[in-house]
Image (spheres, helix red, strand yellow):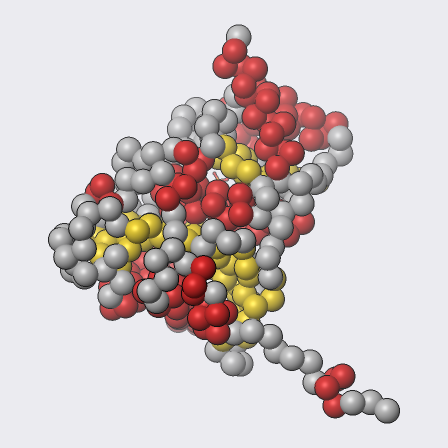
Length: 336
Ligand code: AHM
Ligand code: MG
């Protein structure tokens, strides 16, 4: 006889409940970090709504402005930036924010806030207007200056190992929130009809090895020789090339299926293109928590101390053995 339970599948755990249940694992466990994660999730839902309707609202295309890094701002870049900053400021837990879209650090005015956040509100600019996956990346630190005083740059100038949480939202074929607080990585899929993120990928682990690589190979002739050698090996071994051009989407695929993402230095971008504070640190924390690795070719990404807000860094991130292989090749160069 069929029992009702057999075909009424459980929906799963909602993000709010998951956060509350695991709150005691959070450093300091006072509830503020939980609230901060909820604020980010809420802003993510709003940005998700805007992205889904972008074609109808005349919010695709160029904003007519450049950010400090000389990149054209898209309207959706600006919208996402406003949404996240507003949510973090209103939430009250955050005293300062660094954003890819802001020249200087933002003092939220919440001097009692214990946390600072570095964020890329909408990553994958080239894909915004063409209906390809984009994302948000965030990194959360405990401030180092005393609570009750204005935020300073030193509050942000911390090793990646000091992150208390990091994560990303992926606006893809479904919308997901993936984050870590240093106790593994969990992924939540947005259920629009409920307006909830539901736990769908518990304790995510990245395969140690894979046969897939993600890189803008159009830059091949600009890459260091060792990187070219690595890519040649990938091809000799008939690996699959998978490059979306949205870091979050490429990283997410590699997290689930295994693979390596590379953004080496090029002539145009001798320090690499990606930003240490709100791209590399955040994803490196997740990669390591999922059993993967992240390096700039010489150093573990999490061991790099930022020297400026929008600092760039070469990035090799993904399945452990693949990252080790490219590290070995690059290390040989240093020795000769
Ligand atoms: P953005 O933060 O301005 O969007 O730039 C970062 C993006 C990454 O999402 C992506 O992996 C990379 O830049 C793509 O760069 P390229 O077009 O040089 O391949
Ligand atoms: Mg970005």
